[in-house]
Image 1 (cartoon, rainbow, N blue to C red):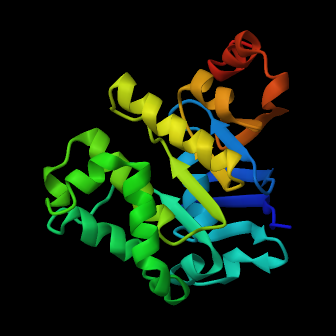
Image 2: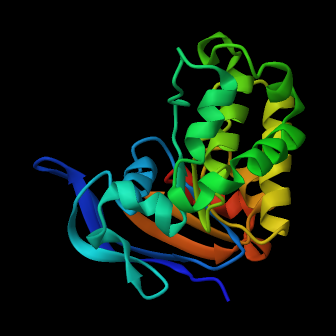
Length: 237
């Protein structure tokens, strides 16, 4: 049985500015957990805190029995946690294929790099066509495909995905969300931060709404009523 990701009473922020206020939520194994909310709600800050990119001012983050917040950030990939960051963050001066191979850097995965590479190209055929191009020459949609494929190269247990639809054409968003839905069906644990509530709820198992650094609503996706959710999202309720 895979391990659950558990965030418990987490406080975190930037210097003297606290952003997260006692945030608690869980991502069940094999499920897609969507975190939605307006700009400034603390969604990206939460993913950074889970990933160890921000120190906690309180609370804990665990994967099963392991405390992630006590582990150096560079060891999290070895433990099976991968972040797909907002804004792509590729190595623009390296080829598409070299960017992918960097994703298989954890020592336990290097022997499987060739197999993972083929899986990435099967998932995103456009990347195979572009494999010798510099990553900086890709379109926004291709770059988002690459950063998602790079995260999967390490065969993670938990995939944290931050705003994958940002700035992309609807047809590309459809493709990316189709991939996320397939990964969920295959049993990968996914935490998805997304502003497009309808798209997120449509593929999620559980939904958390954040406002002002707090979780203000947690529901199974099948129980979510979008009109009521949108009222809370926009602060009308």
